Length: 420
Image 1 (cartoon, rainbow, N blue to C red):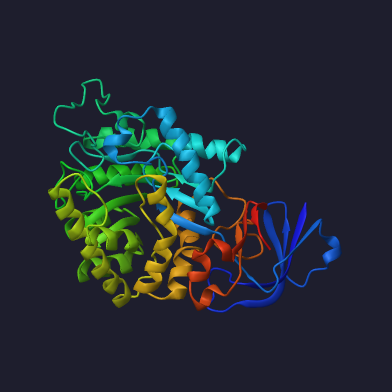
Image 2: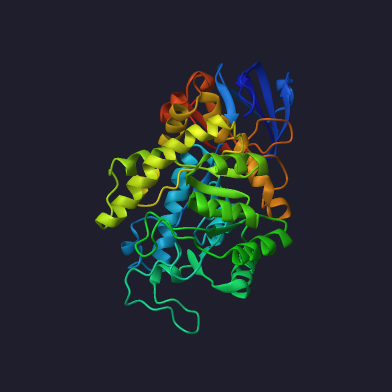
């Protein structure tokens, strides 16, 4: 099946200018030509009417299975969580997100259901369970009456879903990482320091010893992939960098030394500025005052760390939203694009949500589940994951944020929306 998009301008995901008045040929699920194409060879012709063809959006930090507050998730069956996750994934695709990296959630089944046509949603790069030490950010026991049982099973309904895992010592960490790889992880997520949303681990805690972190990195690298880490403080980032962690989720309380290390080592950073602004202003309901204090500190610090990213010209920065909550909370996903534009500029926001994510995803090498084409770019040989926008995104991301200006949403060569 050959689809041909005509009368299009193209933002390729990288360049700060459009490729004007071209056609885009799609054969099956791949882009095969950009330029002049004879319409007679096409089975279907789509007239872009002067709109912009751009890559489908990517989100490198999602939690599809986290569809409510943790205490509410603790009351749900796994079936209920799965059904909610299917709805959240479908909504993501219909917002224009064609690939996401899930960094804490049992999403393999959903990924398989999407790929076999039993559910609708973006491509998923799963991390499976996020791993931490006992009393770390993945230890989501809701109170101190919940005990970790001696047989390794958890007395926590949420932890039993496979969203989180706990491991202590080199041998347990190796086993936990290998278990996620067996379960289809394309990259590994660990918790390398305290969390803002969790109750029992102070923000400044260092989580996992250097040897434990190195064990996680070694096990991941043996399978051709990498470790990303939830991380907020400078001491935690320094330890993680020494261990060989390749991607910092949040990287919040950064200083000049850490920024230089990130630059020198090419470590990826995935911040979340819209969520940070909300929590800095206490606009997200939280269970207690201590959690408010932690999140307020994180929110304010992340906005300051952006200045260091600019100062050190760090270009290994990817788009991530970190939405956790009901479908209405996940619906704020698109707001992050505007927040990034405000924090940096338009082209940075666009690259972060397209080609930069594609570059980050490629670090999974042979664990990457989508190896047939490139992601995050409109180039020959890329997957046909694209949007047609009524407007020019390079003049401002607002035209991407509006549903009415997203005229076409295509993933894997399949059209999910067409209002041209």
